[in-house]
Amino acid sequence: MNDVDAIVVALGRALVARGAMLATAESCTGGLVAAACTAVAGSSAWFERGFVTYSNAAKSESLGVAPELIAAHGAVSAEVAGAMAAGALARSHATLAAAVTGIAGPGGATPGKPVGTVWIAWAGRGEAPVAELLQLSGDRTAIRGETVRVVLDRLVAAATAA
Picture (cartoon, rainbow, N blue to C red):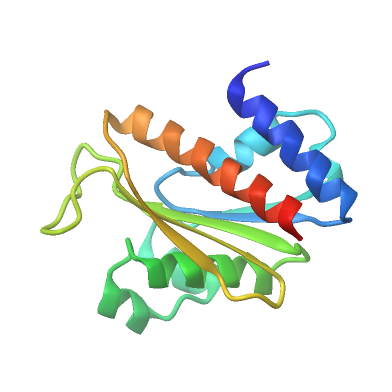
């Protein structure tokens, strides 16, 4: 069992213990968080669904992220990550959601948002989303992989805190 699998097992145990279900909303990770969760046997007891919303239009259409919010803050922002998490909760039966939006590279950097800039957010039903900025280094694969690990770590903490 690798590190990510071990984190997922801990997440599953925490969610099952509180009767909770998880939804994910992913952009730059392209479903890797959901894939990590569902790679572990028994995840159907706690993984509800995953949204891959790579484009801005998908963020708006699938998760209800206001186009004006994206225009004002950019897709890679705390505001959009939080809205993605809230949208995943609103459009699922989950009680906990995580969201990821970022620049995995090699292109896509903008002034103030270099490659490796990733915003993650998580929220429980009825709670305000919590957003966190990650500044990661490495190639696209490394950035996406580290993002998955950090998101899963934060979800374990959120699931065990409640």
